[in-house]
Image (tube, rainbow, N blue to C red):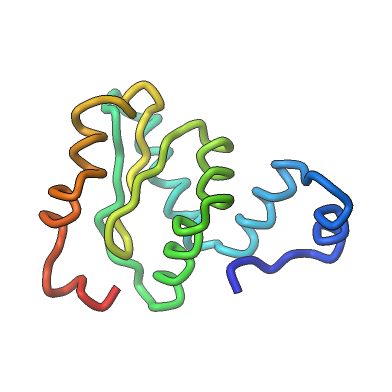
Length: 130
C-alpha cells in the first residue's frame, strides 16, 4: 500500500475534493524516507544557484527504495510534492530523484536528464535490482 490514509482524510475524499496540505501530510507521514529524500534534494536546490539538485545515494533498504518508487511512480503523489515544494521532479532508476527549478524545465539539462539517452547512461549492473 502506498499511503496510510487516516479515516478522516478518507471520509473527506469520499465526500469530494481533498485539501492539498492534508494530502501532503498523509504522504509525509506514510512515506518518510521518500519525503526526507525529496526534502533534502529540494533544500540543496534552494541553497544553491544551480538549476537542479539530485540524489545519487541508493536507499539503504528495500523498504526505503519502495517508498521512493511509490512516491514518484504515482502521478498524484509526485504532482502533490511538486506543488508543495515548487519544483519539477524527475526520476531515474530506484533512487536518482532530481529537483529542477520550474524555469529549467525546458532547458538542456532537464531534457538531457529525462531523455532516453540519459536513462541509458545512468544504468549500471549494481542498479539492475531496482
